[in-house]
Image (cartoon, rainbow, N blue to C red; front, side, top):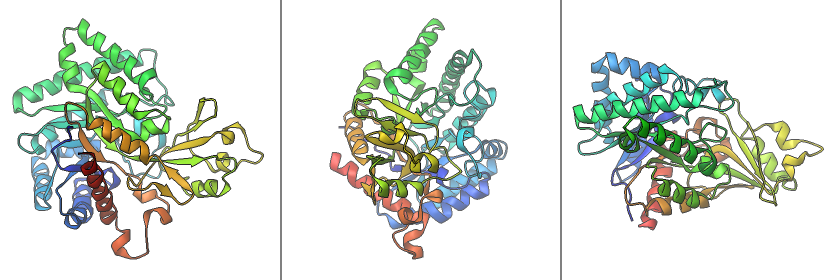
Length: 399
């Protein structure tokens, strides 16, 4: 069994990050608390917005400052979240999080900047990864050549990452993160066919091995569970196809069983309706059919008379909830899928980067995010520590 030997990472997109000052504050206030609470090493999976990436690129002293803050708090950084380009903590993010997409030049420039920055932050003798958007969101407007342009840009990105490797000795890979209702979402129907096309394009340009080396996936367990995939089967398909999993997001989604007759569960689910993030909702029916809606709304949850969506066996909602939670009152989570996925990942003959990504703490319902009203149990740093501790225990059980 192979598990990444690097410290477990948590994604700092849970904290505001529009300036270097905000990032430093998040690390000093929250990441430091988590590190002090635990007796094991941890890593900060930094989210650098486009504004911050530009600032760090043109102001090397600020990158040195960031590096020093990581060192002072006994943190390392080997992976970046380059998915959100703009303000991930604005009042409304929703479908804008997928913009600019991979058909845009600005997406390439931003990702290249982040790769160059990560090459300077990486611990010695370690490899790096950058998670990124699933090319684009299907709910956003796309031109007729969208996919071809995206794949061409990915081939260009692979060339840049090879250049980074050659000139700095630092190996950094891109990890495309499928997400419900995006260009890459379901494994068999969309992700694998698109990667086949990518590899075919690369072969025609004489660089297939280069693309296979530097371009792979970020497997977010929440996302694949939401669409009701058998996550172990999905991982089997990915491995069989020769697509490298460069990063795994350790995440849980919300599940509502028997929504029509589960009034208590529906009322609890209403607490998760919030205006900032997109919460794609999928329904699976007794005949195996799966339907979906773009976002979670109170109208869908409490509709009376009920529509067909409420008559499903179960709903799953793209809302990242604590990885240690099997239940949230009358609601369930997809933690069994998480356990199954990690067991399968541990059987790979290489070790993807592992990162906890519960970015929703600031919008989590109070009775989920706090065990009591005391500051000691309600701070984000303490909650992150609990998630990391729980994940370490889970990984230890798998070894």
